[in-house]
Image (cartoon, rainbow, N blue to C red; front, side, top):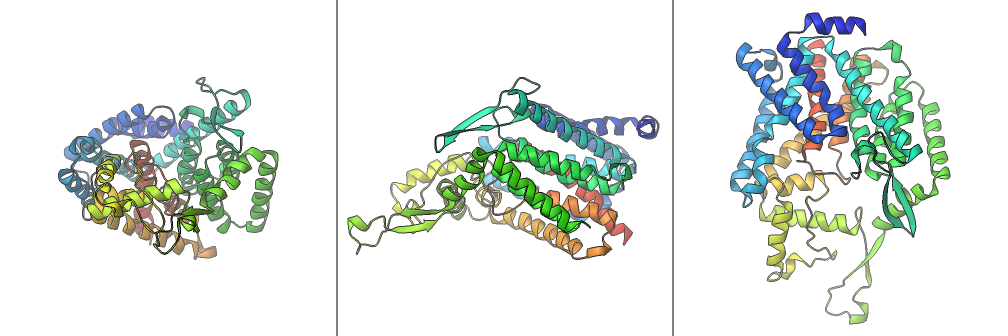
Length: 452
């Protein structure tokens, strides 16, 4: 740590120090203040632009293909904005979307310029995760966290009250999501630095994060945690021991907390189980009107939101209705539904349901920015997935750098995982978490290519 402090003091240029401080504060700021995280990201973007214009940095030539892809994606967002009926709603999140790319480029620039900065990123993200974990444990034990936020009470399931620990996020159920989104970054940076002093840190973090994610009762976060755990076990030398320990741990956790089992497993199965829908066949009598059953995806409400987003997409095929326009466009189509009943009736009994977003990353991209934006994200998901499996199939040939690259690809997949409910893709909190992963991914991708 002393050497690292000395390197920070003596080897980093002054303007780069300011940039580094702002960037390493973003992960923790995302846990306690989205305003601070937004402020730090905006200022860091301005500093990066200044560095680029002042010094004509050649580092970015190394990732020119990725930068071109960013420019194309941003251009699609701008075109969607100018074609949108909801310019006032879409303007700020659309026009200033480029700042998230600048955060990623700032991380890439710093990691590429100073070889020891990966350690600083490692400590900053690790300390952020540990603080969030212990604050969550404190809240679970005492009923309130270090900021005085109390355990959140939710609607009961089968008349049984469910309590959520939310930590720094107060009433927002983001604690589990925060941990699973940043966990792969720590794993990646552990192997990047070949930190022999932290040989068992990954296992300790798996245990701590697993317990906290379980106690949050966030089903999507728990699913993503299991994805990370399985990915870790597959490339581990002690596969069967870790698999047995993990299964045993889940059995114990569900046994000591039947309420959470009811929320996570039983309630989920009821949501996706068969549901009666209207039979529109004119040959059926009124008594048989509800005699057909359908298996729901996630839940009836989620499926209705998915249906709504597809209706919006059909109406705005090329460039979508505009970023964060889902609620407004849904209401407009609902009015049309009074004249065109086909909007509200289909074989699965789906209806137009309005919300701030459709709770699905890919359906939101389709409805907000159309088919062109969807193609860009789908291509990126394909590339990341292909890279992930290529490393996976190398077996015993995986060295520490490849392990590092493997986990940062996993970090991107966690943020873009298809077929599960998700938050608002264009929300600044989610965008900044993705930006952190993407910045490290840019650096490692370039590093792996250069070493070949």
